[in-house]
Image 1 (cartoon, rainbow over the protein chains, first blue to last red):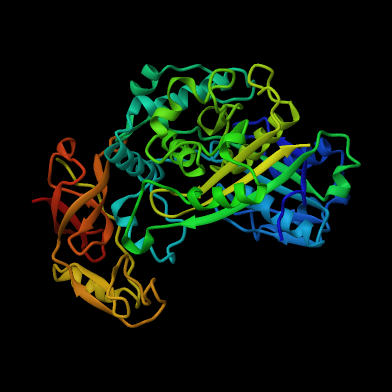
Image 2: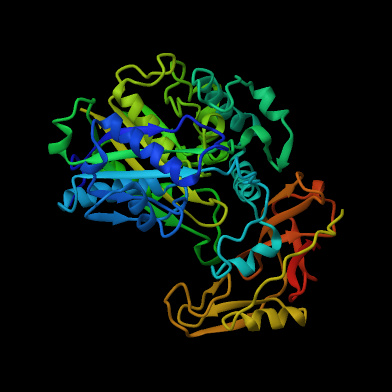
Length: 389
Length: 129
């Protein structure tokens, strides 16, 4: 069954906080749930489907449904790291298409900044029983050096340069200056990026995303519900999800699971990358964006460095405006999971509700793409294509 | 040139004990799927090609080339993480040690050395040949 046209995103909300010292984690989930439902023009009693991932405390939906006072007929706590909330859009559309629910609420929240978490550079064991941990953790893999190895290999195979990666940060920062909630609003140059302190070769500080608190929520609804709501209609056109790892030891860091998830989503939507007016692309690091743009088909493999250069990702300047909220690089990366904010900004663009300085003219088709886990080891990519009706 | 970093101890289990016992004897083991003849990595109880347990342990040559690497500068003791492609064709995560990190390059030929860990079996790392 195709999901094309089977569901609409009716409500979105991004928490304005970036450091939530005065908010508990459940409270942040409640804040964003209330915000997205209000945006849609719905109430908590209307919700009959609930989705959350590993950021939700306790046993995920069990604790959160009780805390939020919900009574859903459908629950899903699929956790694919930062891409979870893009996967949840796909799963919500499936549940709605199957008649299991009509109004699905998806929430994300976290407070790594308030908790003083060194997200990118501190070794962490996510689960000692995971089969790979004993063969990797002794070598001190952290978030940054895993993505750095992908960047190093891309540079080696395709001649990609630090200056080309820097253009991705330049574009994000150019957009972030207009976002009053963005953590880093200063516009930077290629020189600023390549002169910022080296973290782990070849990635520098400004190649890395922010660490921030907050969260976001989405309300995904049945077409019958969408037609009675007052907000602009944003239709789910296509979805795709894929997982890629170390390929049984035949490691290839030059591509991501987006190479599989993207074509599935485009095929379901019946559109091509060249039809896309706006792209929300997961930007944990500059290299993350470059690899995913190639994998989604916006340029040939190996051509990403040229594609992102000279402002090609800047709204009003280049051919593919991306992350017009400033993205994870400059705006927000709540709970270290950026998939939610990717969907939210895509919906803003399709509604014509992005900041006027970054709003894409006649933005009727957008892609939101997330990657969770690590492209240096194993990850899940999820792609959703959305259309303004 | 410093790698006095404390190396976290791997935690062997029944599935992987043979690998770590060999490491204590200075041997690097990899596995081969006997149904397909293909090597695979990291070690596990069943072949990721077939899910069959018709697999065998093989001692690797212990030499290979650097597939990719990154030198962590934001650390009290800079260290280099890497993927090394063994002569047998499979690629494993490791550290590059006992060398000038700034002179490293992809394609560098390396050989295995075993380094002590914090209370566990030694782990295979690599150094330029």
